Image 1 (cartoon, helix red, strand yellow):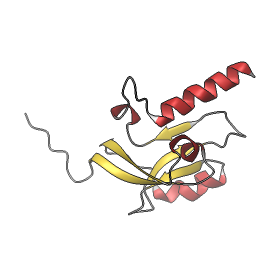
Image 2: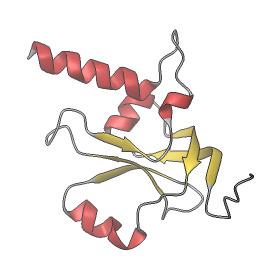
Image 3: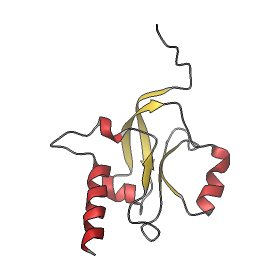
Length: 115
């Protein structure tokens, strides 16, 4: 049986604008990326301001619709590496070419272990 996903399904590659001075920007080394999606979920735009005031940083946003949050993180001053994504970084990871966020996570883990 074929499933009907409807208009809310985000499927495929979408661009994402990365904020400077964030963990995500440091990992990617770029202001703009493209990542693959397969989901129906979004951060409710009505809560973005409240979440930011509480300390969450939305480091990646859709450039075509700034209401779409793509990456959320806590500053390094609050946590060594707390990064969440709407997209699936594992879809671009390869054995000899790991995803930049996975590499950044391992580097943060190794640094924390050595501290």
